[in-house]
Every structure is written in structure tokens, then in C-alpha cells.
Image (tube, rainbow, N blue to C red; front, side, top):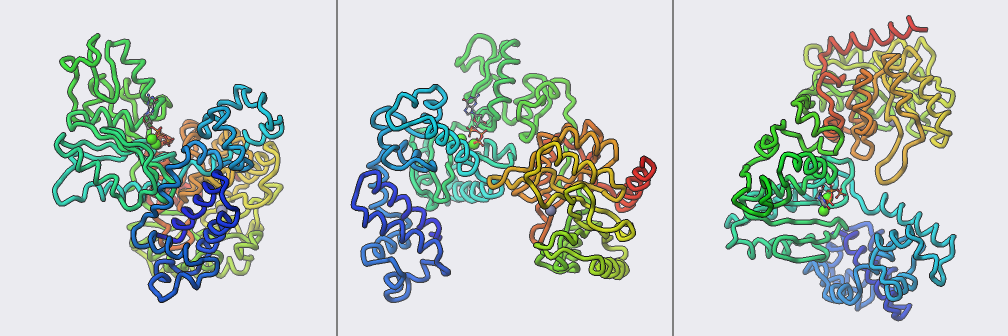
Length: 590
Ligand code: DGT
Ligand code: CA
Ligand code: CA
Ligand code: ZN
């Protein structure tokens, strides 16, 4: 177990003890220990191997050190498991809200049967809470805010983090000496490659005789923190990281129907169901049924994969990424879903930082890594002079980088082309960071907002539009500056920006850092419809994050992009021409 997993458990113990109204000293002992463990410099399981190692940690007495040993050695703590069972789940959930302590949570549960955060939210919306003693208007307003914050910041997980955990769990479930599972797949928002996901959904099929053994294997996974629900076909657990996992087990002949159903989205399923009802089909997680014989297996339409599934309705296969109820059903009926971009279509990468500014690897290492990944070109763009926090390049340093790249281009001739660029801050008035003479020495300029995030929408939009109008601006970086689950983007009128990007032929970046994924896929379709070219950029600060572009490809797919909509699927020659044309065209417009 990792330090943070253990700290998490101790923190929860403290919370439960508080709900139960136990001795304050005991409560403090656990929450102190949690904090200490969280900030330990070394791995706590290493410390436990030394003699008296655990007791020597400040704040860890004899009793706690025994509990730590149990956790480290067995991955479980009987004391914790019993405590969790002794308290309603709903209360445990409620106390996660900022501004709602154990006492009030207890009262909400006992007196008003509010069993969890969504109950509370419903009660607030329907004004039930205002009749309660101790809940003034202000308190209720704050609670509503905390729930909304909680939903944004705590309930969801980054795609990259959830995927890693889901893959590990699935491979554990598959990897048995005697093959228990027939088919198993990740479903839900994770399969649809949403930028954040609420939980991990897995669909598996097993033979009836193996059901028990498979269920047992599931519950024996050592990353499980607690079990939420158990059943024959529907199992649900929480992992130590805090993420929920839902598993559906179905007979093998029903796998595809269940996979389709639990892939969702809900909107997609509903639209499909409503449309096909008119043709006499009933669709649910158990099958596709023709005519009135719902549930009657004799009328069940047999399919063995999702291509056949959609084909039953004369529809084109709909890739999971598109199943968001955003026009994909109509398109599939008309067979007009385009061939979406793939990872293999990418020929190069832009937005690469180096040790010239805040990157961790040298320019040549970044070039080498891009070459190794099979790319034909790499666009270097370090930070500009205003980005002092990132050690931005002044004019002279930029010039020396340009000369260095010229030399490297000789060295790498025939292997990979290095484009000279900059990520220039967009100053508050929309100007770029260098004089025109300096900018004209570059192949491309990414213009990004890195300061004054809190400008009103109209001013921020104008600021970015001014940058778009600059003939040297090749593309706009991370359109909203959002950090998923951490920071909302700045207020900006995206439609208007896309109009100007279209008019001034300026490229829009799809920043593929898994914490950004900005431009949002919900706006990509609009960008494409306005003929705005998109560049999938890793915004890499070290060699190992160049592969981030693959997360960008996921998002581009969700935005219905084909390879023709993406700048960096083009050849070196085409890219050079596009860059020159943009500049030429904008000077003409001026
Ligand atoms: P998430 O977990 O919030 O990121 O989003 P999903 O889409 O993974 O949602 P989840 O985990 O609640 O359910 C997985 C899929 O199961 C969902 O996309 C569609 C299906 N599903 C779940 N509940 C319902 C429902 O009440 N009606 C319908 N039609 N489908 C549902
Ligand atoms: Ca889900
Ligand atoms: Ca789920
Ligand atoms: Zn940036």
C-alpha cells in the first residue's frame, strides 16, 4: 500500500470516530497520523521493516504502529472495516462536503433521511431544507455550492488515471490459471474516452459454472478499499484511490447487448431506443427484441459484435467516442459518419518545450525522442520573454536557439525536420511578445494566454482575437487555459474566436496534455464546420510526454475530426506551405 492510501484510511477513521462522537484525543491521533504519513519522505512499508521503525515516526504510538503493520502486511485493517460497517454510507459521503461536519450530517440522516450527497442536493433544490432548524438561507446556499464543487473536483477522475487503473484491474481479472472469463471489456465513459470519468465500468461474460469463482476473484483484488454492493450480476466496489468500479457479469451470448448498454452514453441509448421503437424494436441491456415480444427470447435478434448490433437497424457502426447523443445516430442512419483520425495518421508534433525554458529534457533529446516515435517533424516552441516564471526566452536567447536549430537541421537532414517556433504569451492587449523582425525568423508562433486569467469574457475574447489578427500568429494555444478537475478556463466566447480563426486562417491547438484537452471536443465539430484547422499538440515538457498526442487523438475523434481536419497529419512540405500561406494571407488582409 502506498503512503497516501494508508493516510486516506486513517483520515476516514478519524471522520467516522467523530460521527460516532468518540474521544477527541483518539480522533486527533488518527488525523495527525494521516497528515504525518502523507508528508513522509520515504515509503512507509520500507520503514516498517526496520526495528522500531514505525514507532519512531512522530505521532505514531504503539497502537497505531500495530494497525499500520496490519495494513502494510495484509492490505486490510479489521478495525477500519468494522467501523465502516457501523455507519451508514450516506453519512460518510455527506461529511466529504466542505462546510458540513459530522454533527450536521448525522442530523440530516437521522431526522430527514438524507442518505448521501445527491439526496441532499435534491432536498436543497426542492426547498425541503429551509424548514429545518440550523439551516439558514446562507448555509443552504453554501452547501449547494460545496456540492457543485465536490462534483466537479472530487467525484470525477482524469481519463488517464482511470484508464491505468481499469487496465490493471481487467488484466488481473483475465489473468487466471484456468480461464474464467469469456469476454471482458471496459465500458462507460472510459470507453467513450471522455476527458474525465465518474467511475470505471466493466462488462464481462462467464460460463454459469464459473460465475462464483469469477466473483470471488473480483472481490479478492488487492486494490479494493471497500465493497459497495454484491450480487449475481451487478458488483460494485471502491478502490483505494477512491474510484468506484461497477462490474456487470452476463452470459456470453448477451455480452454485446450489455457492452453496448453500459458503454452509453445514456443520451445515445435513449435516442436509439426511441428511434427503433417506431420500427418495433425493444433494446435493453439483455438484448434486441423484435415486435411485441419484449423479454420473449424467441424474438431476440442475435448479434455477436457491435457492427452487427448497429446493422440490425441498417445503421453504420458508431465508434464509442461518438456516442454522446450529438447527431451520431442520424449520421449512422444516413451512413455519413466520417472516417475518424487515428494515431497512425500523425506525422509530427508541435508545442515542444526544452531546457531552454521550463522543459526537463534538452532540445536535441526532444528531437531524438520525436524521431524515435516515428515523426517526420517536430516543432519547438519554448516560452516567451514575458513568461518569467517559466524562464522565458529573451530576444537574444531565442536567436541563439534559432541558430542552434539551423545546425541541428543540417545534422538531421533526411531524418526529421525541426520547425522553429515560440509559445508567445498573448499580452493583455492582445500583442505578442517580440518585435516583428524576431517573429519573422520563426517558422511558426503559438500564441497563448498565460496571465490575467480573470478578465471579463468580452475583453478576453477581444484579447485573443487581436492575437489571431497578428500575421505572425500561426496558432492559438490552449483556448481556455482550463486544468481539468482543478481550474476552470478563462471566460471566452469560443464561437466568436472560431469565426475569427476561420477568417484569418489561424490554426487552433488541441492541447493534448491529459489535464487540459483544450479545445474541448464539444467545440471541435464547430471549428471543423468553420474550416478551422486543428493541431494536436503534446505541450511536452519532457521526452516521456510526447505521447500525450494520443490523448489528443481521442478528443479529436470525439469532435468528429478526420485526418484532413488536423494540421499534423500533413507532410513536412504541406506544413511549410500552410505556415507561409497563413502569414501571407494575413498580411494581405491587413
Ligand atoms: P460517468 O461514469 O459519469 O463518467 O458516465 P457513464 O456514461 O459511464 O455513466 P454510468 O457509469 O452511470 O453508466 C454507464 C452507462 O450505463 C451509461 O453510459 C449508460 C448506461 N446507463 C446507466 N444508467 C442508465 C439509465 O438510467 N438509463 C440508460 N438508458 N442507460 C443507463
Ligand atoms: Ca461510468
Ligand atoms: Ca457506473
Ligand atoms: Zn502554455
